[in-house]
Length: 201
Image (cartoon, rainbow, N blue to C red):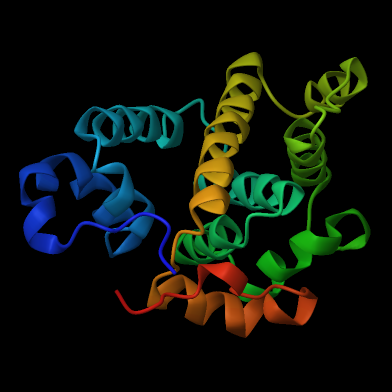
């Protein structure tokens, strides 16, 4: 069952401008925001945060790495919805399915650079409950990233901490696009839609 009803397209019309950047980035309106829109202030605030966190500047880490960090964070949190979304979003940013699937075993994979491994290792530590990020993690990050980029990495982890909790608690139904990606590339590592399968209203 859907734990909270999702707003339909007609009900979302007043928020089209707010949701437009996410729709452009993903190609569809995520069901997480169809639920958030019950509280308009929330969907507005979340989208502003999302724009700030995912904004690419000359100082930024690569966009694909941001989504890999989000995926590693979601793996640590156990949110299947966000794993499918971040995997698909990484793919849209040019990462192939094999590399995204290998995030499950990035420490031993030759597909990742040392900088990527450092960021993914940090994402998993910082996303654990209780938080396991340590001074040593920051020392390792400093070998590869500027202070600006470290703040950016922490911002991605923190935003997905909210999204992981939101979508896992609400059992947000997955959309067709991320399900298709995850079933093709992530299912071999134990991913399943589980409680995020869409049910009839």
